[in-house]
Structures are given as C-alpha cells and as structure tokens.
Image (tube, rainbow, N blue to C red; front, side, top):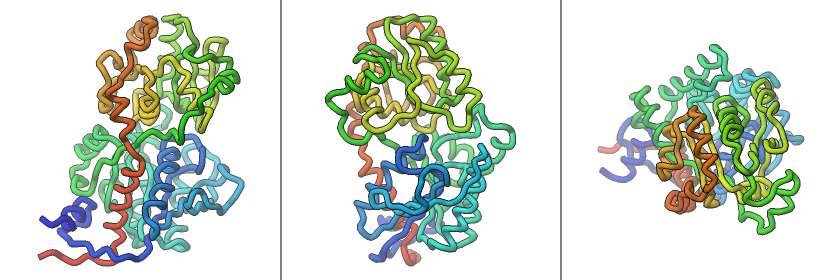
Length: 400
C-alpha cells in the first residue's frame, strides 16, 4: 500500500486515499486551554511546548489559540509565532469549559475559518459534532479520563463521558497521549481504532536549568538535597493527601515540598493547606526557572497520583535524573522505571516505608532518564504537523 494511502487511513479519512497536499498555507485553530503562556494545567503546558515549535517547523502553517478571559490582560496578542485570541468565559467552575468551548467553535467558523480545528480534552470534545457540522475537519487530543476525577458531580461526569464518546464517533482523528490511554479508549470505542493514534508528551521544562539554584531555594527556606518534591494541581486525584500521610508517618530527615495550586477545587486544597508547617511547604504554582530550580534541588521526586493520561511531571523529573517514586497506574508503568520506584496507588504504608529508607539514590532510573531525554518536542510537533497536512489537504483523490 502506498504511503499516502496509509497515512490517510491513520487520520481517519474514511477510505483509502492518496492525498494531494499542495503548498497552500494551513490554518489551525486550537481550543481547550485556559490560557498561554505559563498558565497552570497539563493541557496548557502541552500546548505551550507544541505550537511554537510547530509554527517554526512549517512556514506555511498558522496557529490561532483561543483562550478564556481572565488569564491575560490582552484580547489579541502573539506568543512565539502563535496568534492568541481571548473569548469571554464565565468564571463558574465546571460551566466555563462548556460555554467557552461552544463560543470558541462558533468564533472559529465565523471569523477564523481554519483548515483544521483542534480540541484539547474530552470536555471541549463534546463539541466535535458541532465543529464537523460547521464544515471544519476536527482533531481531538484525549489527555485523560477526566470523568474519573473525584471533584466532578454526576452532571460533570456525564458531560465528560459524552465528550469522550462524541470525540470517538465524530472526530476526523483522535490523539491519545499515552499507550495506556489509547488502549483503554479503543477498547471502549472500537469505531475509533482507524482514526486514532498515540503521540506522547515530553518534558515541559523549557531551557537549561540555572547553575545557581540556591537563591530560588532560599526563597522557600530550602537547601539542595534537603527535600522531597511533588508537583501538580491540588486535586484529589493527585493523592497528595496520601503523600502527606506517608511523610508524617515516615518522618524522614528532610522537608516535603508540594508545587502547585488549585483550579476551582478550593475545598480539597484547603484541607491540604491545613498540613502546612516548617517541614511541609506549599509553594503555589511555579514555572520557568523557579520550577526548574525546585526540581534540580530535590533529593527525591514523588508522584502518588491515582489518575493520569500521561504523567508530564514524571517526564520532567526524569530529564533531570531525579530519583523518583511513583504510583503504579498504567500511564506511569509506561516509563519502565525500576521495580523499586513503584508503589501501589493509595498504599500509604508502603510509600511511608520507601520514604523512610533514606537512601533515595536507590530510586534512580538512569535508563528511563536517557529515554526521556530523547523524547523531543520537535518530533512531536512534526507528527502533529503531518496529521494537520493530511486533514487540511485541498482534495483527496480516490485510490484505485
């Protein structure tokens, strides 16, 4: 089979086709992130790394990212070659995604007229049928099974499940960010098998880590190798409460530092904040050199999460050769860490025993670190670009 036929099938164009690409400029509209740059969230970090590289790879491709109001002072601006447009969004947790995604799809059709629309997350994926009805080839990236997060009411879970189902049924192509997520998705929706693919994430740490990290650590009362680090949203699914309980039980001769903040989930965050002390430090959301310095200075990285689509913070820890202990959920197992680096999700006693061990170098994963450093955002961008080219082709000629 010819290469053009294979790639067209992988993109879900329906029948065996040989794509005539042409050199016309392609315009991609991206919907589903709160803001850019340096806005908390895995999708936000993903897009911030992906799209500037994609624009640089292809001079003929334009990218417009539609974000929510309240995350920037400007309605229209450019970020590293990306055009950013702000659309009004209500500041009501759980409602903002629905209304903003709906308005953004309409805005894309009426004013942007992109060649491809890319919806990030199964919440925005709910509007895949609308995007297709309006004549826009549609890609959905499935980042995680968000309906499993404890924070959602039955209404929220129902909406997210419908978003996943509608993405599977109507998207021209669906990207999953890990093999585990892709496998679960295809098993649940066999109809999407020929229109789905796995494209992984990579570390979202940008640029080299500063040589002198001491000033950053001093801001939080820390010294190099004097603390255990955890990074992520203060969300119940991240299980930082388990980590705090294990830390208090183990009483290691170091501090615990949790980097991250809540997103519309203040009740759980408030419960976590009650554990603040000289030994348990919450830094809030950090990015750039501050985040990189906190990683570099840690003696151990721990990620106890019970639900992930990929495990972006694990990728970040591995790129800096940190010893690490993580829960044994399927997306984490894909990193192929040594057996001693894993513990059963929710098993506080085992985690406490590992923290108490003291010799954290035993949790190093040099092979996994080397593999992770080879994960390249430029290659990830190239895979997205090829998919966009397939879907934005001006015409498809039926193969004989």
